[in-house]
Image (cartoon, rainbow, N blue to C red; front, side, top):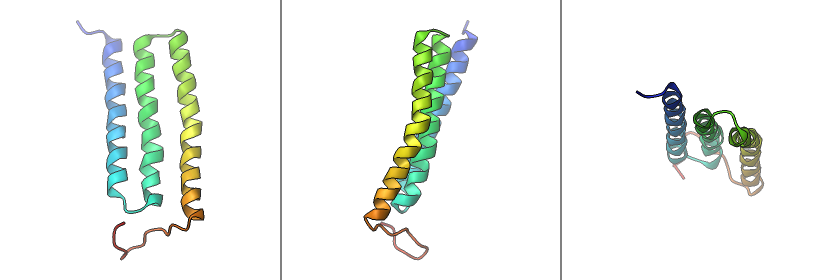
Length: 105
């Protein structure tokens, strides 16, 4: 019979993969760099966190799960900072935001 920990791990991993898929679709569908940063920054971070949490649940509480927790905390800091730096670099480079009526870039 399947262990409950395995089921919970599967749920977390499936949710993480779902958010990765949503992030990829958002990056493909949105028209400019500024709107593409939103799914890339937010849903990718959430997908990574859910995937690592699923692996932590599967592994149990030990040194490896503590290391994964530190990775999650680092990702929650590094991903938004990188997204902000990307947006600022685009702004400084003179990339104009998409407006209604503009053709897709």
